[in-house]
Length: 277
Image 1: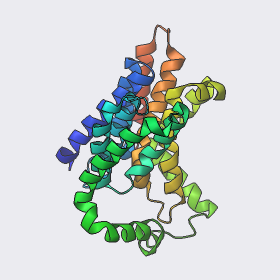
Image 2 (image 1 turned 90 degrees about the horizontal axis):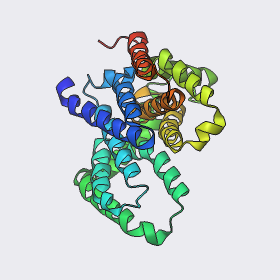
Image 3 (image 1 turned 30 degrees about the horizontal axis):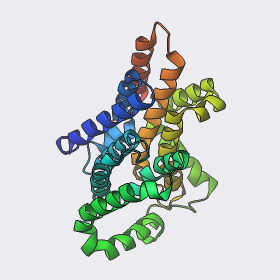
Image 4 (image 1 turned 120 degrees about the vertical axis):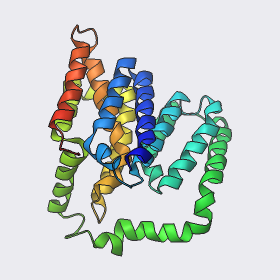
């Protein structure tokens, strides 16, 4: 499993580096990549025969190239985006959930006309469909039914002990996600860094808006599911890595101990994370 998922971790790291460099700085890109590959859940999933390691990698790669295209201003990125979308869908039907937030946000902010978007979107759809339908074509009815059953039906009910909206169920999910998904050290650092920047600064930074739009939808949807399965939100977790790296980059610009602070932040996350050996 580790060998099968090692390329996925490399793709994830490269994508986070590209996103961090584009929105913040090369140092932030390196920090985002380090955070992403050391998050407890992603580290654990990379050692198991689950598809989430590759789902997360394809989602990150898609969003990296989407950001580089400036929300399809550069139409030359469309075929590659279509291929990544198709591979993401082949990996798991939850792929759109991980990328929908940043895509919708950047398209809204760009405010392009349909005439500008029509051709590249059609290319993405055509290439993505050509890749994904190699499996979805003959299996669409089955996978649609299984997705409903696994998220809110009889399969999900096997893992649930109470209503998915019960306060204790929601509290249990968020506590488990903080500990097993991110680590308490990471959550505290992210909350502290965003608080130090202030709400106005966070809203004004395109990279932070992009990162939070990536992180929040998968977390919310997974938290409201019947099964409360943490790995269903895995593909959104790199958004937190990008957000923390970007926030630390903004807070430490011009400071002499910047590199040391970055290294200490990664070391703290690794040292204080739950063991995944």
